[in-house]
Length: 339
Image 1 (cartoon, rainbow, N blue to C red):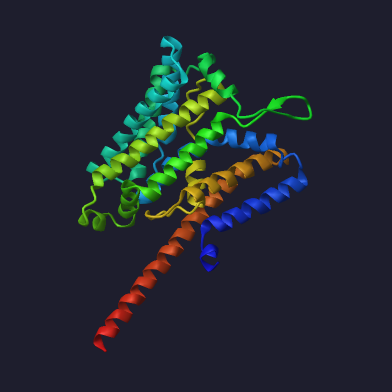
Image 2: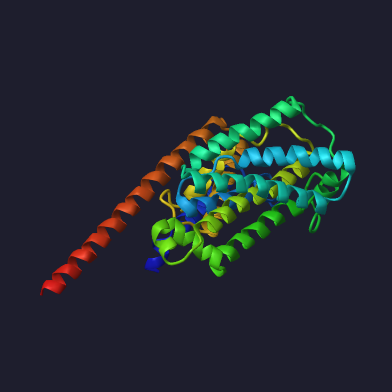
């Protein structure tokens, strides 16, 4: 029980329950299957990208901020390719994953060989990717997409009818998010590359001394976040049924804040898939609650900023306590040897 009380996920779950209860009391429409399905669907894009952000934060603590630009470029490219040459949703995901992973791997190469902090490199590539998209697209919005995107979005795992007679259900969009969460959990918990990511994030020098290939680990992480950005891009296209050059870029702070809220350390080496999921869900509930209660959306921005400040402060306190505990252990060992 004491271990449970020390888990960030436990307190997040408690906050989610309390917040959901309050919103439901004020507006009973919140706790309905239709609203919850819509909530999961609308935040599935950020949720998918959040898994990749978690991997980067575990690796080193400093965030990748270019993943939204990667998703933006991939979405535009995939929509154009499928309009021009056709195809199916499987090929759309395949192209998106390949292009996203390639763009992400470039970040990994730059971070490793030039020894530049992740946030600096990715601020640069964010502007490069986003700038090139605007140069070649001239900011034009593609309002008509291939019919396969609409067909994919319309697939429901079971259909229900609301009081107004409209059909709704659990679509494939949030299912993809759930599958990505499961994939991320398996990689971090049951694979050697997952253990390597935690090891490099905890202490890169020590990890290298025990034989971990630092470059391969970093390349995997940045390729993985690029791949997930590609998946998120296709999912986003199925939701909005268009390709708008600037609709995804600008959401990176929301995703990063949610992952920090879920317990990822700003110093690296810490973070869980469950915490990331709960962090995104809390953001989704907050956003949805403000809408249902007709409260200004500016409060959502205040919430995001507050979360980042609290997360950084919490990580710093935890780091201070860990260092203090290590010093105390070393002192006790030294005194024991003298005795």
